Length: 173
Length: 166
Ligand SMILES: [Zn+2]
Image (cartoon, each protein chain N blue to C red):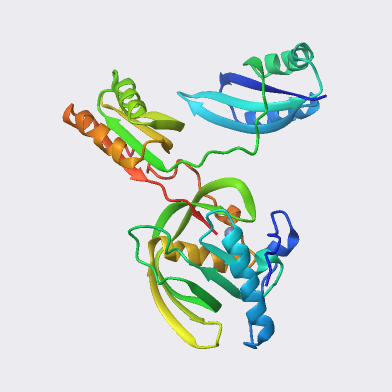
């Protein structure tokens, strides 16, 4: 019987790291499911679903040495592998500003109260060191309709938060 | 007249180029009926191409009239469709009956000019934009053996990240 695990890997970003990791997983008898890799603040990060016959401890043992060689921290959780069940976002939200203290918390809480189910969130700090710009992109589903979200962003805008909302219409053909 | 099975990736027939239709005969009409019936069964599809049900001929159906607040030309049966002009580019999210449980961003022309025949063999011209233009481009890709998977762009491409120029 095979099991699903969520493997999290964090380390310094270096050339070839994805190739190394996928080879390591392949050699450890782990098949890949959905994965998300990001470079965050110069660090390599990946969360990847792995499917394997091995037990959690056996996977840990197999990964310990190659991860040490590649200077990667790793963490494993047993999960349920629910594939083939993607949710399609119908709304995309962009939040930006010079100062990000508390912006995301305010925005996500207000939108949650208005029925937003967040499916994907990416945020970035751009600009320069002395003039950082914070940019956050959220994709989600408007469970209570888009009008509810449009109403919810008005008070946020009044507080000076730059926030825009765009409907995503997925074309299936 | 029947609902056909929709071929799904990686079926090699989806990668074939479809051939021009020369006869507007009873066989063509029955294939179009199969397309109509199969599209009506599909979950929320606004278009379908003959090769998706196993007929490698240049025929598609596009009907985006169920969408609110957009310009469209109603229910269209397009035979030998050909785009003659492309204007502007826009990223949008697409899915495909032949690629279940996956959606992704694709860049398409925002406005197009299109020549095609209807199922009686009468020549038609259209100027299309937005969602309808996207649907037509997606379906014509099927006739050329292309899937939207071939055109995926990064989901982060929406926002331009400016480089620092020093
Ligand atoms: Zn398609």
